Image (cartoon, rainbow, N blue to C red; front, top):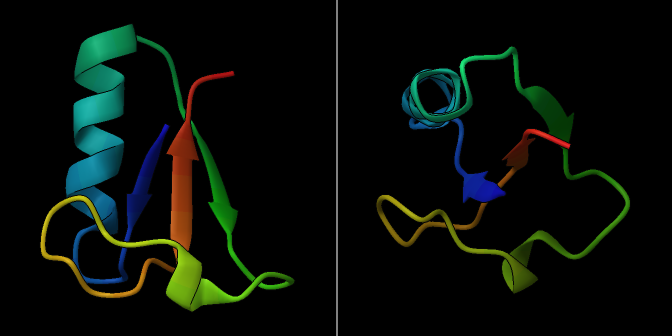
Length: 53
């Protein structure tokens, strides 16, 4: 599972496809405090979760 900002969502999706060879799930963080989750690429607040589960 990767947390990412809007700028890095495409990179996170590409990496998930490369790693798992299946389409990942993209979930927008709407009902939680976004400041709790940090983009794994730049350190900005995350707005998406990219997962393969």
